Length: 266
Ligand SMILES: [Fe+2]
Ligand SMILES: [Fe+2]
Image (cartoon, rainbow, N blue to C red; front, side, top):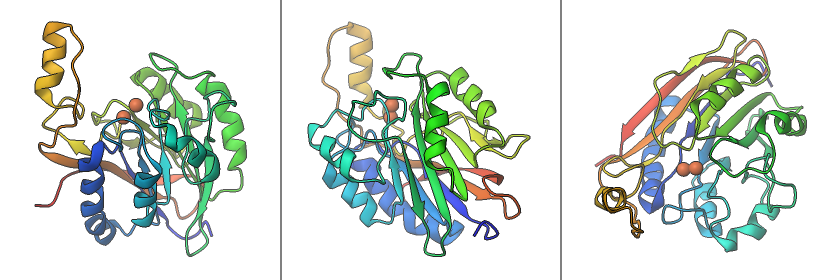
């Protein structure tokens, strides 16, 4: 199966209904342009900006999303807990505690029989994750050992942790992509041993806010230092992602990584 040149479209944190709709409207265009074998999205902010619900996850799967990764907002919605245990294609960081609902790795298969392993990790700096991403990634990779391709979503605040994870896994996985900051970085490249890497993919949501939040509310909170109720902005929605072309000659390696920054079609 590895001979077929697969493509993986990875889309950064969907923020709110506007993020979900932006993905759904961009996806047909992206399928036409890139014909990705797999579509993986980070959905940790899709339910009103915080967390994900079974309904939202079902909607993404119905649109042809192959796997959903999450992050620090995984458990904001109590109704997702049982779903995280029962649905194999939705992941929470593998280095959360074993006692927490859900799992951190899965394998999905394309119609042509290409197997993609997906691993979700959380950084340990400024985020609550019970175990080290750098030690727990080994067990997570073991769970997808038979995969033709592997993509790792390293959901982390600190650029240093993400850069380090890219180097740590270079030559062992197809791609390491960073999420969480909602701001895309300009460092997409294939590392020397063949792993595609980007520090942050960015978000799929409103650029007119402050990482997704209405900007006047975010600014008020910063100016007054008082609690402010945050709502998702609807201004200037964009899809942010990457397209990874897998190597046709070697398993679990990439030929290229291309950044996608695309306004919602009007
Ligand atoms: Fe996050
Ligand atoms: Fe996020």
